[in-house]
Length: 194
Picture 1 (cartoon, rainbow, N blue to C red):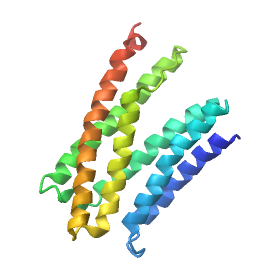
Picture 2 (cartoon, rainbow, N blue to C red):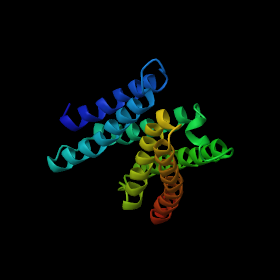
Picture 3 (cartoon, rainbow, N blue to C red):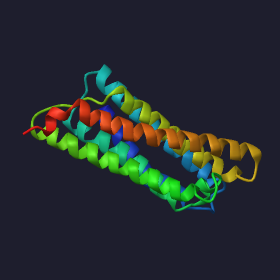
């Protein structure tokens, strides 16, 4: 197993650690620590991809594991955040409802694009990620990290500002997620032609 794949596996192993820390209020600043774990895991995505491409270490295992690791990490974070309503309630009474709808859209897009890629793979077509999808990922990761990091400090002005900025990133990532998903399918619509 090469280095990029080991890094990807490390990211997968960080997901349950992230979840445990998130749910353990006995750990001081558990949400802040969870945000750091999430951010480190998210950064390994750029690292393993860079190493794989620069050293010509791209493998089928890596092509399989990397997108799964990314989707499971982000999906886990969003689902866990829905279990803690105060993450989104700074935005008001409708915050949790809006967050639930946004997360449903984000997860639906990921499932649709994954299915689309499976159809493409069955036709021996390789579909590269586009720039819009990469920008979406940056906003998703920023939103999750900022919202989590703000949690221990919501009773302060600084914590509310960080939460607000995280909320804006969250709304932007939702728009970018839907936009990039539609763009990805339209750009590669030949995959769906019989």
